[in-house]
Image (cartoon, rainbow, N blue to C red; front, side, top):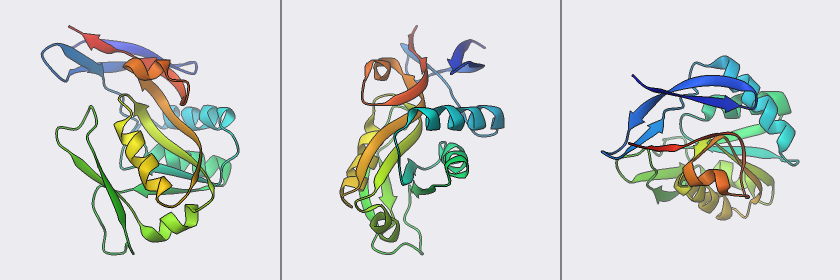
Length: 178
């Protein structure tokens, strides 16, 4: 098994390399279960972000990070879901295809939660930003409620995303050519 060592604002982790095609591997960053990385990343991202009112994050891998950032900042977070839930009122949806997803997905924001972010300062949060497709989908959902997106953030930027100047991130992982 091969690994890639990443530096997350001074905290190192060995990430397993996973093939996504015959010619390309990614370094698999799984936030679930790594409390040290979650708490550290939340602390470091909050230091780098402008003032905000809410955090909006796509389901599922970034949920622990959104929770910890909400806990540290005292701000509320909302999860953009992959499936509509019975409790949702007037859900709004968009479709997306990301680098780690085999098929097109639907992302859904509860209309009640959307109304809470209307006109508010929002941080869109993810675990990794690569192609930016998931990020764009969440931006589109937030725009439907006229949210003021003050920052887009992730623990890691992957591949060309590391060259972007419109996102906040703590470390870089490459797309690894075989």
